[in-house]
Length: 82
Image 1 (cartoon, rainbow, N blue to C red):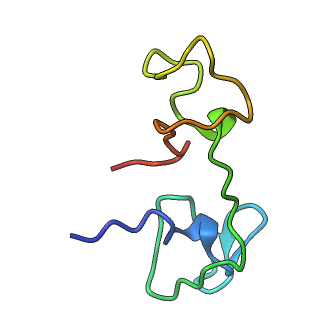
Image 2: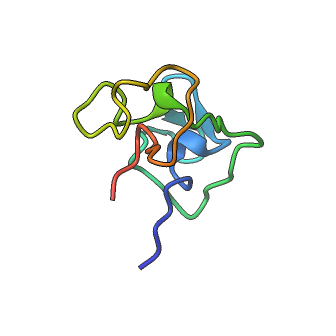
């Protein structure tokens, strides 16, 4: 089984404002992907507390220290699902 987190419509060149796919002429969301996928030139890669799904939650490994801009080895992307 292959896992393709970055291979979703949100990271595709063919997505426009309002999550509209210009290749298939349909509204999509970040759970969609297809074989016509073309990766955007640049992705936002900002692994810090503010972009972590554990920030301000019980699962945070460093709740007393966690702050915007801080990096840690327990970082989890906001939209990651397995």
